[in-house]
Amino acid sequence: MLVSDIAACCKKLRLSRNIAEMSGKIQADSHQEYLLKLLQAEILHREKTRKDKLLKKAGFYTIKTFESFRFDEVTLPTGITPEYLKECKFIENKMNIVMYGNVGTGKTHLSIALGVEACKKGLEVRFFRTSALVNRLAEQKKSGTLSAFLKTLNKADLLICDEWGYVPLDRIGAQLLFEVISECYERKSVIINTNIEFSRWVNVFYDEQMTGAIIDRILHHCHLLLFPGQSNRLRESSLSK
Image (cartoon, rainbow, N blue to C red; front, side, top):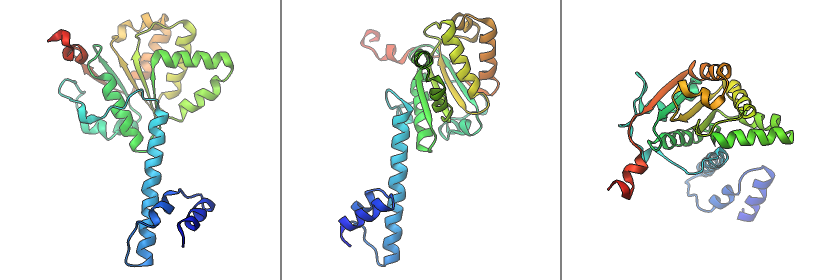
């Protein structure tokens, strides 16, 4: 069968063009072995395509991995290991993670690395700078499409909110963010990166009752990771040399 004929069959069966491209490259001792290898190649191709789509959909502004990350300056809770985090067990257990520490200590790096690993496992991830998420929520509310946007967020297995508390929120923004966190409660995992201690969150949300409710939902099922070191960017800059 010609490659063009295989491609036509793939189209009818809604298979990828990968099968047609691989058909002439596979070597086998029998028809059965040839078919098995061809189907295995298609499965691998589909898995890679899905993972690539998940990574793109996640919204990472840069890709970070564990290869360049060191856990020696991170204080993990008792019983929590780097392997537990890398295997995304916290998502399976619907646990939240709060990463607290100074600016530039690796919180964003670790959260993105965890998000990338989750995508590799076929899980849906959404990554936002918190101020950008709140702005997006406000825009969707103004245009009447908030419900549809919230549905897309609800499909995610992991929501990552970077730079939490860096920008004070107005009342509407705080209410919208509270709604998102409430929808995530005990249904999916949330990672929050912040340099603001819990006692000061009220300065971000300007409402003690709402602040207390948000903290309660986040901390009920949560791992607290501490980043006590100095800024990696400052340490690596020419000014520190």
